[in-house]
Length: 343
Image (cartoon, rainbow, N blue to C red; front, side, top):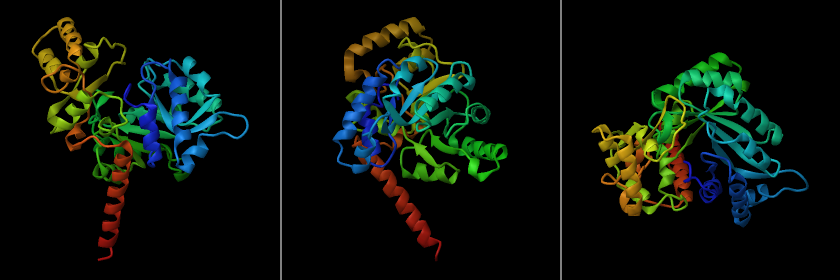
């Protein structure tokens, strides 16, 4: 969620009992500024746990109860590392290496060294083979298993979490039969409410990541037009599509082979399928930027990344309320099932 997952959103999620992430984006140039902003927001919070964790007694980096996500094919480890002697985020999420997961061995090693192992290493995968490679090369603390229902960038060819997550779980148990050495798995892709979380947990996930749902939160930095397009969308399996055209018209190049992005279908995609050249499509896209919020939606051209769960999102609400609704829905379902099991 580059440019959307800001310190304000991350802190709001963590305050509510989740773990919010800042998106470092395509580079790490402004990472220290983002962490400084997060620190200030944390110190303003009245929640004791958050406030204490943002303060450090004596020397050493300040532990921040948020995470940071890196698109590793474009971000600079060299630019990111100087931030860690000052700040120690709870987790670092590594995604999309340029030439395979060996590329992020140095990311994991150097971040662990810089934070004395306090920052947990999360690595995102989308298939069984990648999960095996990551475990053998990096030994991450968490694997984020992303299904193809996810909005934004992911593997172009893959499966939903309903099949890929349990298969990865089984494979990792083969590799590591010792229960004490199991790696935590977080499910991502198409999850918009507590029902999706419960389903993912039944598949073997220890937690879940929501992306598209938080695009429709007050703390998210996307435009009103983007949020309206999210709210207006329905039937996400039909109204969204995986494609590379939404990158090309924005002159974004460099994603590793095998990746594309899922977004709402609009005129950019429709014209692309009809044969409009990338050059002309790009020119129309740049013209559309002048329309502002009116450039979003099915009749617009502006990129609106969203997952297949978009049809479950009905309104813009505070990020903390989203987290609260997840907790309440999960607890209610578990309570009902607990009572039902005694009948």
